Length: 147
Image (cartoon, rainbow, N blue to C red; front, side, top):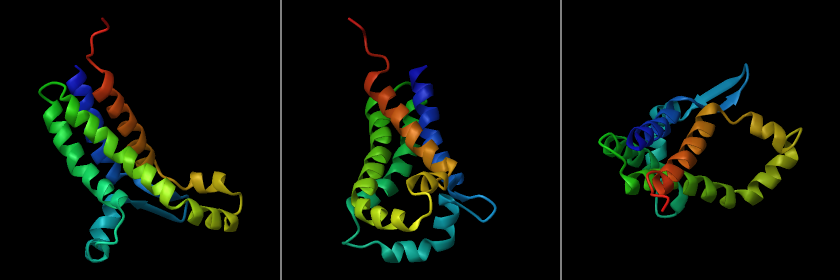
């Protein structure tokens, strides 16, 4: 049963790419899938030696989640579940820490401050983050004996 839960959580990480990551009601909505599909050439050209490690971790999190979903179908694979849960959280942590100064500048220009900025973050991001945390916890703690 824990393997099936881990497989579903891994699939949800992949599925998050197809839900809105940026959502400005009545004006704009963007999924990660659309952004990559429509701008693949520019994205590939932009990747280079100066690309932060968090970007590479973010990119790797999706194929690792696919592998984790497949590996966990036959029963809980703790290593894959833990890795597939940890990579998105590491990418989010890197992003938050690397753009802290930039966000301070940006939030000064946004009416309402950080509360309004958080309103624009779409369901895709929240699904990505929440399922990654749940998958990490399943990988670390599920199926362990209590003795």
